[in-house]
Length: 171
Image (cartoon, rainbow, N blue to C red; front, side, top):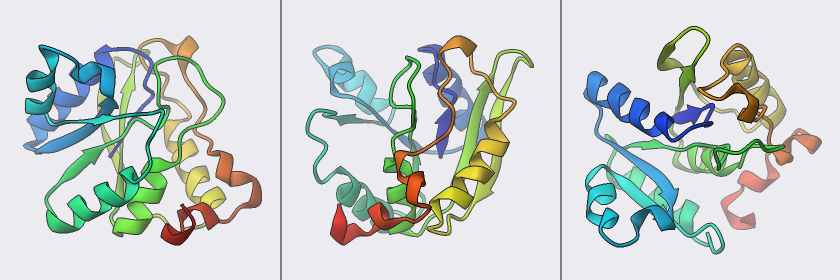
């Protein structure tokens, strides 16, 4: 599941509410500093998986293995990677979904319409540009809680239009 736009700490609260209302048992990725000290058991209890963004080696393979072992696992990824405005989304969600052969559900928060929820579910095709065009179309009218911090859904992998970086042997 994608959680976007990711422009506020409140996105996390909305994500949990959406999951609980849908009866989903979810896991989510968060920067490792969220898991420091007294917060660690709380964040883990809420389904958090700490990520060392400075050294993410092996994370995709680990998550793919977990997803294959537990077909009911719902993994939430915020591909913007930060609540700050950026230039591209991180491609981890894409690589995980292709390698695990799982669909991607588009979760959203939209301040202007005061809505949040789950949108369509897509099967990625390994044609990065075409897949991202579909994702961009869905998020085109979604702006998050702080619209000025929204990052356009675009992967740096799109330049060539292929999914060479999704090949598990080339990570």
